[in-house]
Image (cartoon, rainbow, N blue to C red; front, side, top):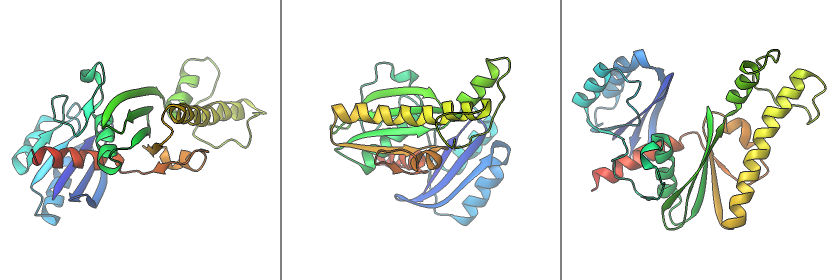
Length: 243
C-alpha cells in the first residue's frame, strides 16, 4: 500500500492506494497532519511507502514524522519520471504538472493527451504518443479572474462563481459573471480545438477544483476526474520503486 500526500497552499490532500486503486482520500488542514497520518497508519497498517508532492509549506516536524514512519519519496525535479521531459526549463516546472503528466502516461499510454487542471490557475499540459512531455500553458483560473477584476479596479465588486443566464450581462454583476465564466469556457474550448487541429487523435482530461463545474458546459468530449493528480503521484512512486 502507498500513502500519497499532495500539499497545497491551504489544504493537504491525502490518499491511500492499493496498487492503482484509491482506498481512502481526505482533505485536511496542515496542523492536523500528524494526527491524521497516525489514524491512517492504524487503519491501514500495510502502508510501506509514501510520496510527497511539495514540502514548501510543510513544517519540518511533519516531514520528519513521515520519513520515520514510511519509506518516503519527496518529488523534486531530480525525481525519475515515467515520460521524457522536453520542457526547456524543467526546474521551473510545477511538481503538480509533472504528476498530471505521469497520470496521463499511465492511464493513456501511447496517446496524445492534453491535461487541463482548472484550479487557482488553469494549466494545460500535453504529452504525445511517444510519451514525450512538450509543455503547455498557464492561465488565470476562475476565482483569480473574479479577484483580479475586484482588486485592480476601483468599483467592481468581488463576486462568487455563478453560471450566467446568457452572454449579454444586463447589470454589472451579470456582465462580470458573463466575462469570467464564458471567457474561461471559450478559452478552454479554443485551446482544445487548436490541439485537435494539430493532433487529430486527442484525449482531453479535465481535473482540478473547478472541473465539475466546467465539464458540463464544455462542448468538447473530455474525461473529467478529481483524482488525476493523486493517481499521478502514486504512479511516480510505483515507477521509482520498480527501478
